[in-house]
Length: 195
Image 1 (spheres, rainbow, N blue to C red):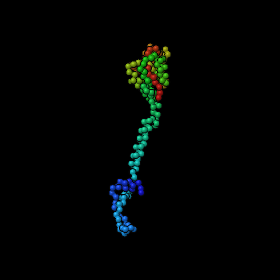
Image 2: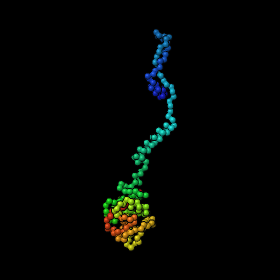
Image 3: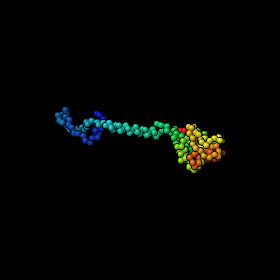
Image 4: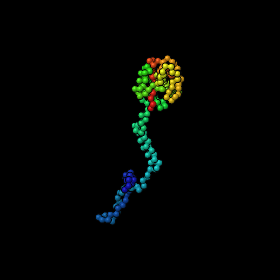
């Protein structure tokens, strides 16, 4: 008996059929006797449609992906994220300090974080930093020797205009251009490192 036949038989136990049995020996020989026989529905099993199978498989795959993404097993996205308290822009992470230090101690702090004082290489990067720095003054990277021109040269040979001529260490104030001040002054600072 197939699984489908058993299922139909179990579902219809209350509706047994009356059948007959011909008795061949004993005092009632030659007589028919009524007996109860279970009713078996012989309809074939219905198989799920291909669309139903596809939907079930799709749901299982989605659930597995959600579980894997939730545990981080599929991608180590956190490895490319910035540390807590740092801000991401382009392929760099930036740290805006809430304490003030001189330029040298600021650079030392950044180095302890496997970073350096931020070297702003483009106007877009400058506008990003200016949008986050608030009203405080911040030390940034690149220093100059006395008598150097008032351009801050960067690794990609671009130049940003600078202002201020009080010292040799660059900081950002109200304008989106470095201002050179005495390195012994204490300001907030911006560290940067690549992701």
